Length: 103
Image (cartoon, rainbow, N blue to C red; front, side, top):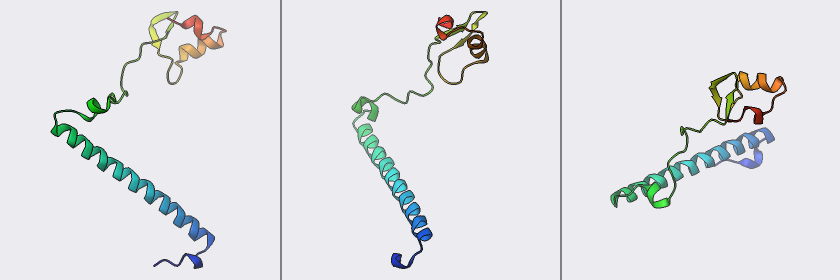
């Protein structure tokens, strides 16, 4: 058994960090196990878990319509998400607003 009364402050802080990591890891593992069990039960009945919960599959990777276009080259577009393209930065530096670039 660990005698925590005789540990230094540094040792106690390291122990706390390890315990917190172990708890997070344990909870994540249990969550994955529960999801797998729920998914298996849904499949036994001919459904997917997403169908039963009403949750759509991951939204990542879906296309987003462009909101802005380069007035000098309309084939260059930007959705308004992520890093601004150079042509947007240049237009903003030249005094234009995003509204001026809107499609």
